[in-house]
Amino acid sequence: MAFSSGELTQAAPHLARFVTIFSDGIEKYKGARGCRELPPPHPDFMQGPLPFVLEDRTGAHTSSDFDDIYDRLFFHVATTPQRSGSSAIMIYSMNRRASRHRDSQPFHHTPAAVLEFLPDGSLGNVSFMQPAGTLTIPMVRYLRKTSLFGRSLSRKFLCSDGREYKWVNRSVEGQEWTCTTADNYLVAHYDLKPADVRAYGVSGNNLTIYESFAHLTLELLASFIIMRHIQQYNL
Image 1: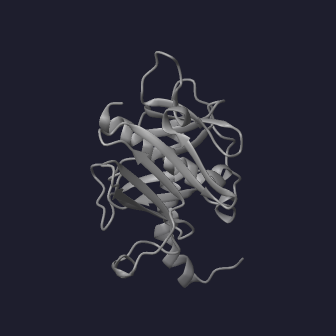
Image 2 (image 1 turned 90 degrees about the vertical axis):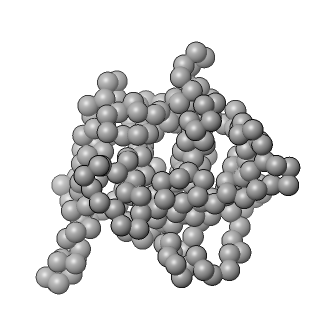
């Protein structure tokens, strides 16, 4: 596919930003003890599928938007109080990125996932809305410690593809959260905004999900939000 000089000029900042995120994520992961790197990208990887880099608009796990920098996926996260005094975090799949116009429109979406927490903040249930019906799982069964006496911020979970994955907090230098397969292959990572980088309209934090696992984006986002809740409440 050929591009005009004008198109290349407009795309240059986005391509440079992607290369930085992609390269930094892989290099940080390669340096972590016990981790196995993904196969090196094809020399023409820019022409193939790109990782989903979801900008975290607010940085708050209870209320934010996660929008892909290439406008392929958009998620809205909101907290809804329950009559019982508990709370639920709703994850909505959206058709376009967050904006004042979109947020001002009447909201009638059905959530793609619901994370329910008890009044004291303890774990409740996670529900995924599927075509065949709602799948509800107790969070204590959904996200389990990777070892009996292990740290709380290292937990494993099963995804809809039947494979086991795990989230770990600060296991890789420069990555606040890292998700890997049971074989320690990099799946996703959440990076905080560097202190010397300015962010406009977003927190500057990014959740990167690699293309081989893009079909699990909703499950990875839901489990990631639960892990941040566990961290906040020291569960």
